[in-house]
Image 1: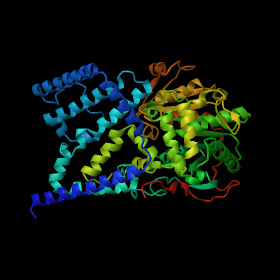
Image 2: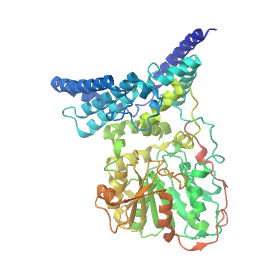
Image 3: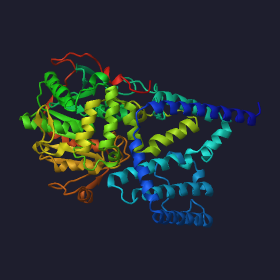
Image 4: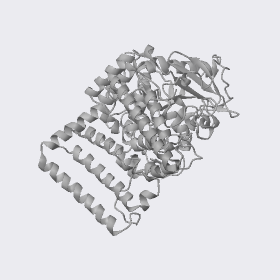
Length: 589
């Protein structure tokens, strides 16, 4: 077969496969509950209706767009696009879709890319400032416009992306055939929600490649397994370290490969480390509420740690929603007069949800009602739903770049530990998740003294007197640094607030050996009056926040003691770490 004939045949196959995949996706999505963007689309439609009602305003906006595009065309005719001094219309930093040099060296591709960016910025501004929109609706409309612009990026088109065009000619269309086959697989896997595969499901094995720090499950309930890790030092600190990971993700983000495992590093620093591995819930947990993560989770876990070590007070660390739970637990124990935690570490954890960032666009009474209706039918929120929502916050990086690589270039996804973990979500109990969204995100009740009760005990964060290490990440799109900082206003004990580099995961999982980002810390007495004043007066340090945290924690850790082996206390080992619960998958099958 001649090359051009093979190319034509493969293009025909790709079109047929793609058409079938899209038809199947439409069939499945019609049966699925409304997606995360449904409420935002309505806000966008409302903005367009209001703009259409004022044609003069729309005409002015169109004129502005035309002028900006005209300037780009004039510049393209005057000088090459790669020349220094280009206007700030370059693509967002790190957008892998534009990695091909042709986007810079080809003047027409560069103009196309810049024109798209100008149009995207224009569209977001126009809909956000549509007349008469409520602020929340305006923010939703802008977010939807951003998603629309991401979808219409020229790099997403097989006819415009130079890397795709070259791959198609070189492989005679086989890249598109492979890509459409993957699209079909992802459609079936998502059952109405299209999530491009980031990693192959067999790229890693838990207990061998990831989550491989040696330890034993020493206690379990239907809600969690408690892991005690084996010591690796000749002596350990007296107070054990108890890690409360988020229940909205798998815990092994803190125990990835040995070289970037926070848990392994803490063990090597001489801490006796315990960790709660939450169940991946199904319909049996539908009525479990948010307070049950404390009453049936953290409380019995600390009792088990005491049986294993003889220590009643622990060093507690909570990450993301696990940190929010830990803050609530500290207030709960304070109200009961119990001293179970000697000091606390909150990593990328919000307690004040007044400034939750872009996630706020998904949270209002109407959207929550639709979400709760869907959760009531199953008894839980599908893991893919929350993962998809988080991915939309960085759609260029976490959706469309993978779509281009997988569906247009036909490439196998790289075996990256972060992406494997991100593609291994967990389900969420219906009632607990509804409470989390309504009482924390929507009503912000955790910071209102007595507004929220767990087990009949009113919570008041002002009662928290224990020392707190509070960490935020500079580019966190899930728990924005400004939002995390607000915790300093609500607790009464001493707080060390530290700002790490990067985002919600990469900023946390940043071992000293990595050296990619530094961190900022406040070295003055007292507290900053605002996040802005903290930024102005804090100091930048090289290296990882892990070493700063260790230096802060050591004075609280107690004297040295002989190493504690799992099973040498009252609790016998049940099974080796990472245990059964973390292996239950909600996706990637």
